[in-house]
Image: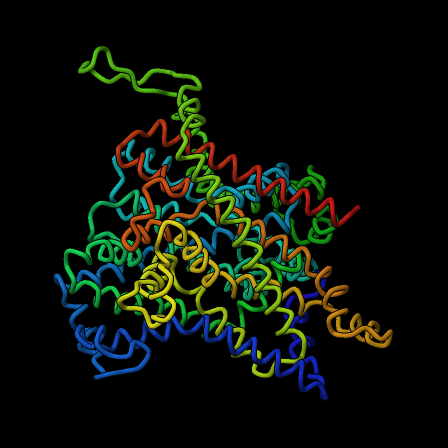
Length: 296
Length: 312
């Protein structure tokens, strides 16, 4: 890892295809096709199911459309119990976008300092943070609950938000990337120009680290968006629930309240959309970022 | 750093001249480093280190009552809770269940991820961008939602997989563990594939050309060059998978609505969760500590074994 990760990816992407191998090629494409069906079929089923009325959901072919009622279903979901689902979605966005943005910034600053400055305790800090990667987040949920209940802060926004800010793996990625992608000479030049360290970080280093920052942000976003145990333990007021916890709660009530099944199907589809869109739009960045972490 | 400080010396005229440039440089960067590291360090301390210490402390206490209805009192109980943990049959059965789960699911998932990554990298596949994205999409599905979706797909009356679900009960006591394994595999294959694929792409092409001139075929190149080169990436994904397996929670918790075979102590984390809602925090804390230590020891042992094998 001495070159910038963008340089690593380019030659491989243009690796020439080989000719004259019909049988291996057909076999490879067949495997790819089967796997595509495996990975996409459940999502296709969900999409189709979300467009159907309750009767048609059970009465028609579950892999093809009947009357297209997606918008009606959406309207029903959004108005159910004064827009509870909309509130959950907004909660999730607030927990996730906030924690991922701020968490990425903090992890990036920390990883950058660990890569670019020598100071006493540097290796100790790095090793402690790195072992933090191995600490299962679920093992922290219960003690966090006990601590938050000591200060009477369970069942609040902050009880879920604050612990979500910490991303040790982000520090690791940021350090690896800063060491490889931010040349010391450039920092030196910036210092000669009289720029302070903080300004140098935001105007020069952070830009050079952009692919890594997008990667850290996206994976942090996924982790917080998918988080289930922490909100489950911390929150009892359903108006504070994130989408995952809300859908889970509805799913447990389907036996008593059958109309919730449709809500769960449409809600599930919606809960996937932000992440899918984010990954699609930002794929140019996170692909280069992933290779940084993997090669090291 | 000393060198950098020397170069900036002529510009830094506002500093007292008594200090040497090197010393001054170290102080300045130490301050910058503190500004950069500080905020993360504080949060890490508060929300990682303090909870760990707190859990250990809590696990050493126990609640005592004087008489049957006397007031509850927290007293230091030493390893009392741990004695309960180690004699708890259902908990250790759930740990065993997760080890069996991991022993099958992790190799299957990583094997599939490696195979797909090698195929994508082999030059045999057209439309690589599409496949890469298609396989990765499930990673964007939250575990809870993935479990809800598959739960419906497994249910005999709703499933589009009727030929399968009407012959096999995928939600019975014998099969539900592997039905859950399928959900986890479905979500994470693409993610692991992408990590391995990225590592594959960073191998210089010249390495293959040399091997090809020596007459090595595709399989030979994959086995003797590619797989050894991406070993670190495979080890990384394996460690994450081991940690993930022992922490399994949202999928089995969701499956409790679909299958009565999933009990409240089905996985170690479900045990912790059920104790925290009773509540018996001291015992739950002891379970958390034992679980975290088990995870730590297993992933560390795996890392060490993997490292020893790569440098014999």
